[in-house]
Length: 294
Image (cartoon, rainbow, N blue to C red; front, side):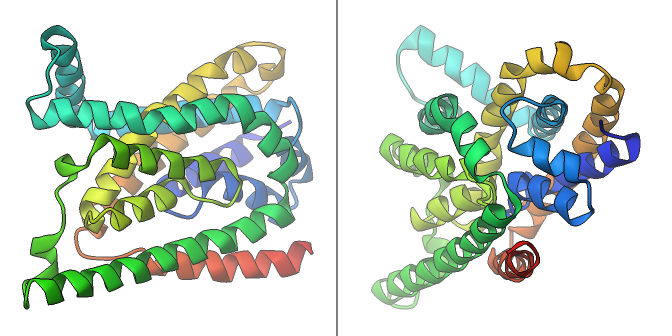
């Protein structure tokens, strides 16, 4: 089974890595393997296991932390959504954001229902997660490089205008562009590919700045993470949860705390900084883990 110490460590890890662009799923495979918690590592790719039931609590707790942090945004977005159902028109930023999030959520939601189990049992293993973590680092670096090249082009076209002034506003995204970002989110089904990282890169390539790309990524992650947790709640309440519900509660509290602190830090971080440090971390740590588990 899982101890309370392991539960708290993994909860803190989940809360941080779900939002930092370094892959929570990849770390939930690699860290137990690295610490010698072999039963937990093996249970990650099992068809059904107590560890998967435990992770349900962490996902729900992480989503709740995001809901609390973005509570004003979500109140406005949900209100905007129901107004559009009544008026059958989209006239405000909040109404537009609501439907952008709906469109962006659909691809990963449907794909997750269809293929999450298969992809997890095949790829949620230490070596595969290490390789995909390196791939994640390459994606982040490539996203930054392409964004800078596009930025240079826009500045040249504007004859010296500041790049930040030319960055698109989040509410100018088209539904098809939100759909593209949603499709990118599918990559997070592979252990080692970060949900927040890949959706941020997709946003940057649509012309958003880091701050808006991060905000859209965090808002988009909330319903997906929450739905995935709620969908699996019967596992935690059923036989798979026997003997671990206390640990799940402790891990969930740790995950919620870590997620709240992480999103508060990252929202400020991406006002002025980039994905590059996270890319380098993924490449170095991923390469080290390939050597360790090859």
